Image 1 (cartoon, helix red, strand yellow):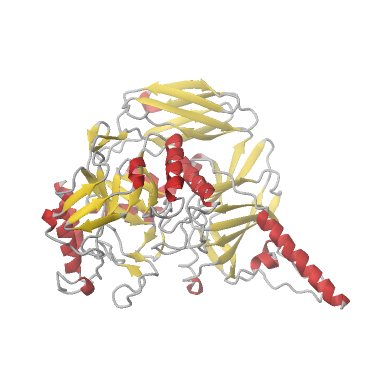
Image 2 (tube, helix red, strand yellow):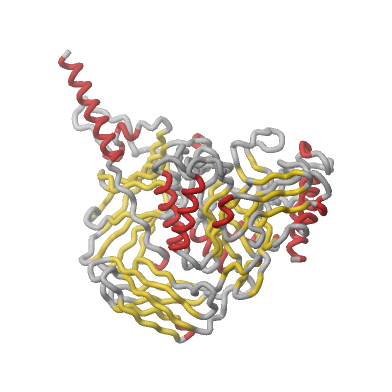
Length: 599
């Protein structure tokens, strides 16, 4: 009996410790921006892993890396002798036994470090999908939730001279109150999917800055610089050498310096994606960046770039390399996707349905592609859950903070296909819109809807959130999910808020590449000919849409999505791509390419 109680108490204490660790989790810090300009040491490469599909690692406290002390001891886990995974990279595509895993993989990396006086050290993650717990030398340093935005921890004073052990729990399980939640239509690639870096700084460093044109202006920059550290009141200088421009300002007690200056900028545009070298100097730090200047706004029923109306020739892109069947993260992956968009004739890419990697955004900007960046607020979000509003705000802050100096980003998209009847949906997203405008008033803010009706060949577009959206962004799949009710050329559009520009953010249908001469009027054929007919009809209908400012087919490449269960034609793929996962252009590609040439 005495032995029994000892066992129960020991296990109870252990479970209690795990519970305390859970409820006492320390959230990650919002990451400093422009990591590439910092003094970094890459922790990319091979990481040893423990596969934990049952979730036993928390109970066993694998981060402590216990070793047997006596001959009778044993430990039921070990990183030694385990498999290795590449970081960055998703775990699903690297080991066949992890292909469909939604669960936990524990990662371990050893690194050497020698502390330097008057220096600070940060551990920066580009992204971990979806939840991350991070341990250094057996001590938990914090957690982060959200699979597509960066986070960091300061480890000054925690890192040891010599060898250090870094352990990361990466858990890609979907959560009912997660962002996204249970429902989404892409592949849930898990793991440490983006770069990991050590960043060394002085005691006071340039943490953040915002240098962009004032809304509505073509020659006036209104921005700020923020320092982090002890010596927060300093002189800072902002310089653009090519323009022989230099401006000084003094930070306040919070480390903020506000600046405003004019110049005859060569404005960034798809035709001339001009970037300037920008240098920010303080007494204790220097950061350089490549920044472009442009104005984007809505005037009446037009989208206006640099004072002139522009038609948005777009395509939807998921962050997946179709040839590798893996999460896209390398420069080569990014170029593959973006060059395919350019070949199609695009001047704009909608990066769905989550923020893509930072290198993708920068590459698009250099190639003259405008960018739509989107939060993973996709269907079935539990807006009434008490934790969700804070998660929304955190992900918004992380998305905007990272890319607010990228002039190529012209749209912050805050939601996709949410439903007005969802409890607290309207209130939560209206508040989120207000917070986004407070963070950045220089870009368009959009909510994407599929709340519409189609009766008597009239397409009725409405949603209360359109009042707060700069564009009427519509996902419509006439010809696929909705049969045509009459001639496309005679389709009428009844749009709520009729004075705003209309953007067709999704349309299309599925086709298996190579389907031979299928019927043009039978959706169940999954034929290229039927998909081609959808596109021909859509293009015909576009001429009837009032205030049309752009179109964005769904989507560029066929991509993995396990909910697509027709084993003959889909086999785990969404087949709405204009290009197959093997790079074959479907007939619809040529319809869209010709349309963009005319526009």
